[in-house]
Each structure stands twice: as C-alpha cells, then as structure tokens.
Amino acid sequence: MHTNTPSPLTIYQNITTHLEKFITGQAHAIRKLLAAFASGGHVLLEDLPGTGKTTLAKALAQSLQMNFQRIQFTPDLLPSDILGISIFDQRSQNFRFHKGPVFSDILLVDEINRASPRTQSALLEAMGEKQVSIDGKRHLLNESFFVIATQNPIEFHGTYPLPEAQMDRFAMRFSLGYVSAEEEVAILSAQQQPINTPKACATQDEIDTLKQAVQAVRISDELKRYIVDLVAATRTATGVQMGASPRASLTLMKAAQALALFDGMAFVTPEQIQEIALPVIAHRLKIDSQAHFSGMSEKTVVEDILREVEVPI
Image 1 (cartoon, rainbow, N blue to C red):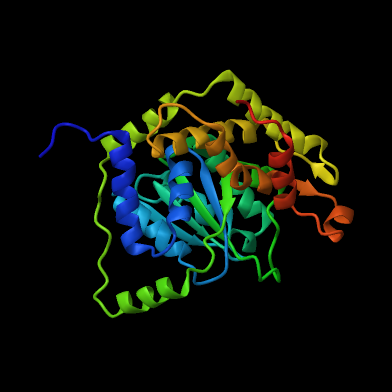
Image 2 (image 1 turned 180 degrees about the horizontal axis):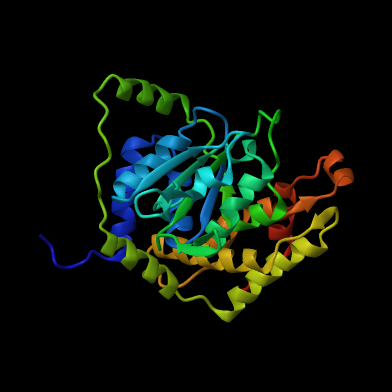
C-alpha cells in the first residue's frame, strides 16, 4: 500500500486511461468531462441515442468509487421523485425524510428536457447551491455532487426546452458524436468478451488532491482579462438576444486551469482557453429568431468571437 499520493497529473492520466478502456474513441469527451468534474462544474451532453452517454457516466462513477444514481426524466416526474419526501411514521409520530436520488455523488439525469419546468427547476438549487430545501428545511448534498444530464437533439416532441437560468448552471455542453468505423468494429468485438465492470482507480483523497491542484494552477491577469473580453463580446454580438453571464467567465477560467493541469503545465495558456471556450460559452447564449433563420448559431457566434478578440502574447 502506497502512502504517497500520486501527482495530480498521474491521477488524471490514471482515470483517463481507465475510462478509455470502457468508452472507445471518446478521448476528447473524456477530457472535457474530467475538466468539468475537476473544476466543480456540471455537464450537459446533447447527443443522439446510443452514443454511450450512460456508459460514460456509470464508468466515471465506478472508476472513482462514487455513489451513482440515474433518473429518467419523464413528463409525469415530480420534484419529490428527485429530492425525496417526508413520510409520517406512525410509531414515532414524526415525519421522517426519505432521501431522493439527488443525494448521490454522480447523478445521471437522462433526457432532462422531457420533464416539466417545475421538476427541472427542482434540480436548479441542487446544482447551484449543493443543497435542497424540503418542508422548510435545508438538506446539504455531498461535497462531490456532480450532475451529468443528457438531452436528445432530435426528439423535440413532448419536450420542454431548458430555461436560460438552468442552462447557465451547466459548466459545459458538448456531444460525444459517432465514433469512427474502426472504433465501432472494436466496440462490436468487445461485446463478444465478458464485460468487466470498471474498478476504482482513484481514491477520495486522490480526487481531492486533483481538485485542489486545479485551483492552484496559475493564470495571469492578462489571460483573466482575455476571458472577460471573450465573454463580454457575446453581450454585444449582432443577433444575440442574451449574452453569457459572469458565471461563464468564472467557469471558463476554472476549466482552462483544469486543462492546463492535464497538459502538465503550472499555468494557463491562451490555447487552453480557446479549446474549452465553445463548450463553456455557446449554450448560455440566446440567438434572436431572425438571426437563427439566416443561419446563425451559438457555435458560429463563439467561433467568430475567438477569431476577433485579440489574444494576449
């Protein structure tokens, strides 16, 4: 048994290598997911069915030896189905609180846009404050509480688009996409082998070390200004009804610190900010309908801003 904790970079590499055994061809997605996790943000995966979203969430929870819960969002789901409920105990003549699935470390919320706005907003406080209020009492969630939500971009029938406030709670939105033909063949071959359950490859101490190391990565005032300039540019961009909030600037900085650590660097460079800007900023923008019809999208707005805003040297 090693008493020495491995370096933060080694911890990250161990988790990545481990996840790549179970999720084929998704190195970029794993990098983004771990950047959000290590910097304390939540993730929205917008993707087609069958691309491995659930597998990824489960593999992460098992690799980190964390409590995992999954909620399938449906139109009839109630806030109490997520948060929990107080039930009257005849014997003690008191109400006892039964915790819902939100009291977990890693929570997979499948098809988040299928539930009613009331149920969606029940997650808001949990994601933003790491606590829930039930019957006037505050219940704290686990310190490592991490939400991976999915939404299906195709099936818009019977869905409730996430409101801007909810979108802003997600550190990043990205998709896994389809893997290459060779990787898909590898997936078929792997299915013929007995499927192994991911074993834990990082302890709680190592996860804490990784998160603390991310916060310690240096970022210069020039790059902080660059981040603020990028986010501020979304507020004045043509065709944008609502730009990104200061929360986007904070998230972009934290995610860039995580990527710098993953790259084995002690400080952030403009490249890391540019790499993560799209998944951090795009989903927070609201494009006006006129601009949408003329082919403008959140993605093109962010890409234009990245080209136009001057990069500090």
